[in-house]
Image (cartoon, rainbow, N blue to C red; front, side, top):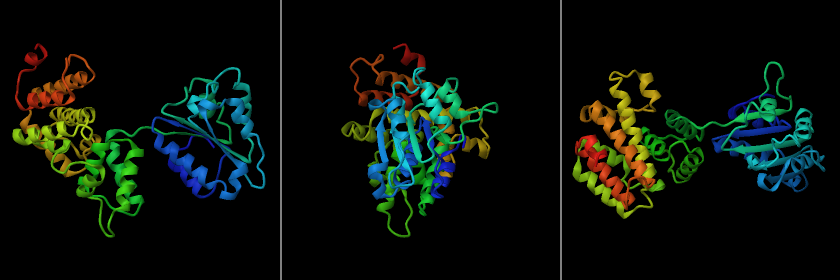
Length: 359
């Protein structure tokens, strides 16, 4: 078996089709954990695991230790399972010294063993021997008993559709407003996103959908004082509301950290800048920006009227400046609350950019 997607592997596992070697790699740990967890729970029955299932940790093992476990025959079971967590920390995984032994095993793995290597937050270099062997090519296909899965981070415009599909897979529904709020607030951290959704599903009344109110209650987003309301206040030029929200943020800094708020503001104004350059977006253009729902597009359509191209460009620059200040660059003794307050003031009052940067 060659390179497979997470969905393809999950289908095979549901049919109890197991490969001798799984190499699970990539920047998105969610699918790596999901596949490894299914193999952990489903290959062997509970009473078989004592003698036939072992979990190793990359920083505490080496290639010899992994192969030693993988070459053991099962006792009173059809298979044995070896799971290597944090395999990226195995010091000699790609060393020349151990390569002949690792290569020999991968080309001829023990058919009764299921070896699972969880290589998180990065991918193998496809130019090096291990990466080249597992990926294979037309000249030399990947070894028949190995499966390589690469788990990529979702793009921003993929998060909302993914979230909707996840909720549907649980035979439940989620409103567009709730989808937008979760996708924007949590972003593409799929592990955290699914944890929050699973908590909501436990608390969901029969026949109800996940809605904005439930998200606010369960995720801990204030109904009145949150980054979405601040963004809306900026678009409406509601100075009083914006200042009330800033006061709430300053009084509750743990629930309203600066960096995620800057990220959400940057996403809004950078999309607005793109829309200024494409004033008549097609449906495909909206979707590319991750704006699937009319409720999302409304704030952008209003924003186009409030902030012209040059002002929007200046605001993007101001947000980048605030981000640099949050990292201690040209911020003096400003607190996070003061950095955000200054940024919001500059957005609401059209001070020329050169006056700010030159100050």
